[in-house]
Structure formats: C-alpha cells, structure tokens
Length: 214
Ligand SMILES: Cc1cc2nc3c(=O)[nH]c(=O)nc-3n(C[C@H](O)[C@H](O)[C@H](O)COP(=O)(O)O)c2cc1C
Image 1 (cartoon, rainbow, N blue to C red):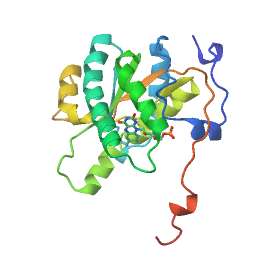
Image 2 (image 1 turned 60 degrees about the vertical axis):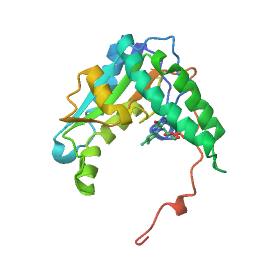
Image 3 (image 1 turned 90 degrees about the horizontal axis):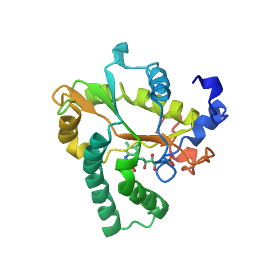
Image 4 (image 1 turned 135 degrees about the vertical axis):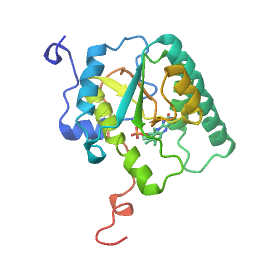
C-alpha cells in the first residue's frame, strides 16, 4: 500500500517536532506493523547526518516474538531496577505519570510488535569524550529521524536504554557482533491508540540557552 492510500496523521513540520512523544501506554499491542512502513521510516533515517558521512549506523529490527521476549526480559530487568530506585528514593519533582507509564511498558514490552535497536559500528569504551561524542552522534540523528518518520505514519516510539546494562546478552540473542558494534537504545514501535498528542511541558528557554556566554 502506498503512503497516499494509508491514513496518516496530518501534521505540519512544527506539529511533528512538538508532538513526537515518548509513547508507552498508547502503543497498540494488537495491530501488526507492516515491514514496508518500517522500511520507509528507515530510508528516511538514512538521510540523517553522520561523522564524515561514514554511515556507521545499523538498525536491528526485531519482529520475531521469541527474540522480542528474550530481549524484553533483559529490558524488563533494567526497567524494574529503575522503578525500584525511583520508588525507594522518591524525588519531590518525581513524575508519577511517567513512572506509571514505565510500569505499563515494563509489563508489556514483549507484546510490542517491533523493537528497533539503533547501533553504531566501532566500540568507544574507554575512549576520550570527543571520540565517544562523535561515534554516538553518528547514530542518534538517524534514530530520531526514524522516530519522527514513524510518528508521521501513525506509529508511536520511545527511546529507551533499559536493556543496555545487558547489551552483551542482547547481542548474543540477536547475533550482533558485540566487539565491533555498540547498541544505542531499544525503541519499541507500534501503531498508537489515537493519533493526537500534545506538546510537552519543558523548562523555560532562558534556563537552558546561553547567548554568547554561559
Ligand atoms: C537517553 C535517553 C534514555 C531514555 N531511557 C529510557 C528508558 O530506558 N525507558 C523509558 O521508558 N524511557 C526512556 N527514555 C524516554 C524519556 O523518559 C522521555 O524521552 C522523556 O521522559 C520525555 O518524554 P516526552 O517527550 O514524551 O515528554 C529515554 C530517553 C532518552 C533521550
């Protein structure tokens, strides 16, 4: 099916940029995601910049249910650790909605129809910060482009890092060559329940923007 015959949210560029939320509770776990739609998003992601245009990025798209369950188990372990730490040391600013939403995804991660793992070739463990910055930034713009392209097609995503403490085990499950390739995140992907999302509250701009000097 082509883009013209599918029904997508009708978003201006500014609406797309301001409403691409971290979606956890509103992922439709019962609706499959077509491979061709994922490929459209991945082709758009390939247009992102990378250091020296070396395009060291790789995307592992996990649709196999046994593999999603196995990687999901590693992810859940990280999620439960995060929740336990948040519950043990509640901060005054703690966002209960965020924690509820994380709890929901922890319970359902294995049911999310697609897990996308953006990766970058060349490990930087122990390298100086500027080398690490360049390597990670050679996959993150592509991954965010993927998430924007997904949103524009009615798909929800959320950048997550819960499985990364068990990156080596995830590499084993998925056949990723751990010694040569770093995983940046695990992005659950599904159609959203409804397509309307609002811009989020953010800190005042002048608390985070420094003109000419800090
Ligand atoms: C580096 C990074 C790591 C994150 N890790 C997780 C994670 O492990 N689990 C999770 O549920 N959300 C994770 N998030 C999602 C953030 O919680 C989310 O982007 C943030 O709360 C803003 O959400 P909003 O854009 O919907 O307001 C991560 C986001 C980033 C950028």
